[in-house]
Each structure stands twice: as C-alpha cells, then as structure tokens.
Length: 383
Image 1 (cartoon, one colour):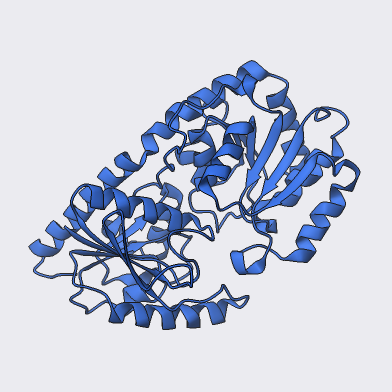
Image 2: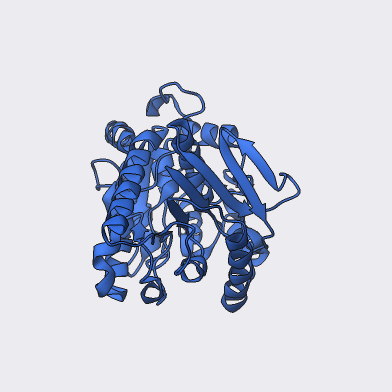
C-alpha cells in the first residue's frame, strides 16, 4: 500500500519541538514502513533536517512552514500557503492522510489518492467542506460525535481510531509506585485551557498540609510559538507558587524523549486538569503517563472517557464545579493518602495502555485504509 501522511504547517517531524499529532504520525509512519508499506511523510521544513530524507524506511519531504501565529485568521492563511506547497509535491498514493485545514478541500478532485482526514481537534464548522473526503477519522468518540453533529450527512464516513501510546525507550517494566519520588507531574502546554493554574493553586494552597513532603513538576512550553500562553501567564503561576517555590518546579519544555520518559517514570501521580471542553480531542499525555505506570488524574472531559474510568484505570475530578480548585485538591488528597489505591489504579492504567500500543493502533489504521480503498473502488472513484 502507498501511504502519504501530510502533517501541519507549524511543527517539524521528527517532533523535536513537540506536538501530539506529529509524535503520533511519526511513530505510525515507521510502523507502516516496517510492515512493508511505501510511506511518504510531508512536514514543515527546518534547518535541523534536509528537505528530503529517509528515516527508518520512511521518505520525508519537507516544505516551508511557519511559527504558530497568534491570530486564528492568520493561522488559516498560513495553513493555506503550506497546503498549496505540500500539494505540489505529493506523490500518487492509495491514501493521503492529513490534519491540515485546507488540504482536504484542495485535494477534492485530485488523483493523488483517497483523502483521509485526521480530525485532530473538535470541528469548527469546516466538516461540511470535507464531503469529498473518503474518511473523517476521529481519535475519540467525543470528536466523532461532534463531527456527526456538524455534518450528519457524513456519518457513514466517520471512524474512531485512538492515538497510540509511545513505545518505552527503556524497554523495561516501569517501577512500582512505592519506589518513585513523591512527585505530582504535569506535561503539556502551559496555557489556561490546560488548567495549569488550577493545579498550581491547588498545590500551593495546601502545600504545608497534605502535600508537605511532595513536589510539583510542570513540564511544557509557555512560549506562544509552541502553543503556550506566554510569559505573563507563566509569571502568574510562579507568583501563585511563591511561598512553596522550592517544591514547585517549572521545568520548561522537554522534547528529549529519554528525559521525558524518565520524568514519567519518576512521578507517582500525573495530573492533567484540562478545561478545554471543545479543544481536547483525546489526551495523549495522560495515556503516555499510564504507559509508564504513573497514576493518572484528569478532568471530566468526554474525550478521556474512552480510556480512563474513575477509580479503575485512573482518577477523574469534576472541573465544572463552582470551585474546581477545591474539587481537584480533594481528589488529589484522597489519592495520595491511599497508596494501595494509587498503586492498584496505576497498575490497571498500565495494563489498559497496552490496548493502545503502536502495533495495535497501526492494525486499526491499516484495516481502515483497506476499507476506504475497497469502498472507493466499489463506488468507481479514487477519492
């Protein structure tokens, strides 16, 4: 099978600047190639990588991209320019996977391959414009339902395939909870929609009581070019943590996969208090934490329900309550005082993450690609 994967205009691949979508499709492309498929991956160019390169049998083609702009309108303009340039170098394939905004529209009458749209975020009115696409693939049931709500006539084209959990670099069993440091970890963009302020305020407000011998580590970019909220938000977080600053660590972004994995394996509890009801589409970071044996606590977003069940494979707090900080504080306290519960749930989460291994998720994608090809052939079209 010939598979072309076109990633977005704003982050390079390999994912040296982060990005869940970039990380996922970089892994999947290599898995497809390992199975003998012909894979081309198109991504943003960067001085760090040549314009053309073969990595793990995957052909990488790179075109000019951009830093993420502040304006949504400008973002769409830059995405259009990138999509046009990407379209000009696309080889003929059986399937063209893309998560760009404009490419599914530009390719609607193309002979480059069946257009397979990876809907990486909640749809925002654009789904009806993708009616010529062969597939609209969502990473969670919540996103799939949003697609159908926006474009009910396209329901038959919607499929749900989750993100895979990154492979362990250590290739050893993660250490048990009781052998880890008493660390609460957050990994993600330092932005209000991720609820980082809830976590910092929760920890700082009770640091001398329940969290007296714990530390909090915040890993992720605050810079706007990487999706963070900027220096003013980071400064407000540091001000909130001033009285316990010796136990609140703002580590910044960690793009080195070895170092990032070690942070997951060192922590006892991973907290992801996202408030992005219409922005969070799956939750790769919590799944990654589960795959490293870390206990996971998340907000009550629909997208997390596919793989996190409260008190079973993870923990959930209700971020929609009048006082979400208090709700989060109470939940964390209940979890960390009961180490038997934390250990049991972390072990169950680790077992659950095995269902999201790269090979298993690759199986689902390859099966879906085959369905798309068979359906379009039966309909007498190559789209």
